[in-house]
Image (cartoon, rainbow, N blue to C red; front, side, top):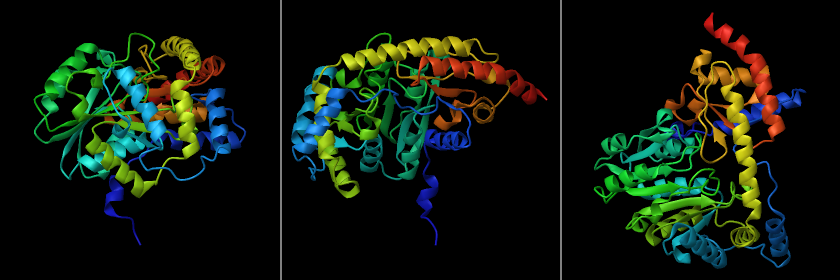
Length: 394
């Protein structure tokens, strides 16, 4: 008995593997500071939880349509129309269990074996995993520290070919916290205009967690609606990771295809959760504002702390809740340092290579944890790093 050959092309998300190792150490009595998992440590706001409870009592416990409840699709269409400045109707939305299905289903619906897909590297690892699994050719687009975690538009233009069937953009970005500049966005859209057969997947799951400037979406540009699918959701903005609620918005022909894949895959998303999603979109937003303000405070603490450590430098991210410090000065590889920090310092983080080959020389820390725990992690690393670097130089 053996797995299908295609399974060998399937990657993973290292954050959950590191989390499991960290939990195992905690079970042994070790104290671990969790900076590995991209999950807000806040509770889901009370008005959203209350909406779910009322929905349960009101009987929203049965199957719904594969594409989502009509009222929730309408709320999403209204929200996206307002925030991106382009009109959508409910039939151009689909609700899925988390953001990942939009990545997977878009690739399955569009990509034939050998088709090229451009994606950011370092970037969310599921992009490359799903491209490879579907038989497409992953084409990494280097995201560069010296460009404030943006990318070189000349390189993007060079990578675009007649074989490009999909371009994936992620701004604000995981793992870097980078934000695409208006100039980059303009050049990207100009380049895409020369390749009308290439679709665009815009992953905007961190669109509400921005500290400097305004979020830019390619959907707001003229003529991009017909060739763009938006990925967004509720996990990050409203601390709803465990609810598994994401959505896609795009051309109806592609949304219909994703809904068909949904029928085959998971049937539908839980109905009471979708009622809670309406409360998230239409209810008070002061909870989001407060969370973002707290994240900004934590960002400043962790950036200052990392820059005070030997062999480490860290850019200040403009969005999301990640930092991606350069650790080349320690003399250790990304994986070696991440492993050592977990075992020696009790600090759980991810090697940059978890986000692609171009992540070598970096670590990713999630600052979705308290200031006190971030300071504790910095102190532990300050103690451990000289010893680890000394071992690396021998």
